[in-house]
Image (cartoon, rainbow, N blue to C red; front, top):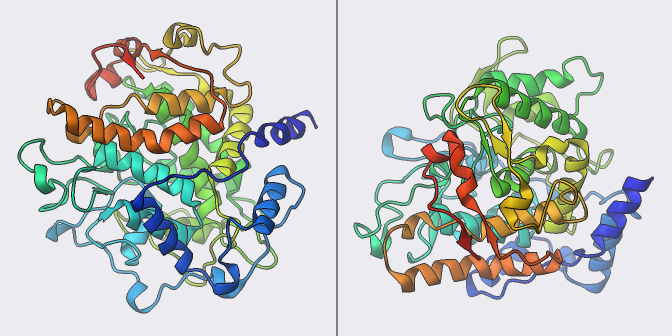
Length: 452
């Protein structure tokens, strides 16, 4: 009862969709809107906004179901085609993006523009424009080429002939999502290996980790990999990484936000919706399909880059998009269920040597162990930490104007989120503390505290 009341009070702070005033984002919004039926095209109308607010508060339990608008086409131009790795096509650590490329909702080579990512994730999965825009913009600045024409990024590693744009040769090739570990991707992933645990392979599904998730519903009468199951899996994955990976590292943005989101996204975006189950059921075969897994139970096979959208699969209801407010509520639930999810730190060179960071020292007293689970504090720390990441594409370039442009693009999407969450002012994160962890040092390290 207290938890329900807490969630209801918290959501009042951010129930409205955040606005991002940029040409690229507006284009993505219109493109996404144009894929929806005429009668469903008013996501920001007073009635639909009120309905969404009530749903967030738990007043309305069902999002509804409309088969015609929710069914996703996987035939014709959207039929499954596996990637041609020999030709330089790439896939990466995000199963949803891999599936979108395999079905030609994103370019098949694995490189796409900001607007293409926003439009495709909204159209196929029902990701909110606000959340899709933040994630795509962050990926663009950190992993891609924010100064290209058009600006874009790779869902995997570098794509031959793409990414450098006008700056090719001056700043080097963008690293893509695969090269973003400890800046975006993180250890203790639901199904991928930690960065230094599988000879640097942090992008392929590791069958033991998928099987561990799969077996959580092994004997269930009606298997459903819902949030409760995924919360349990998150705790298990954290425990496993700490116990086995001497280089385990868990930072504020990658851990509190991205690691949490990768777990909630599995159910929120992959569950198959129906009239009987409008919230969706994520059964074994659907889970296997989205992760590129084949074979019978007991003899599963992981197929790199083979993620696919199942036949007869239905997305989230139109008007029930998974926005930043929805994600915020899920992260609050997750943190209450798995408090280890906000315990930052890492192993110090041997398994089971985890040392937790002193949040007070890390943040100049703004956050501490006593208040990090209160309200939006955990998410505030995560988003504020994200502002301090230096874009890969501009790292060491010395081009102040270009750095300013890239950081300005990132701040344009971050500042409204931080404001909407009513975050306390955070002057500095003492990133020097991260250098005690070999997993962080090996992935690039830092020179010390960075002013926001």
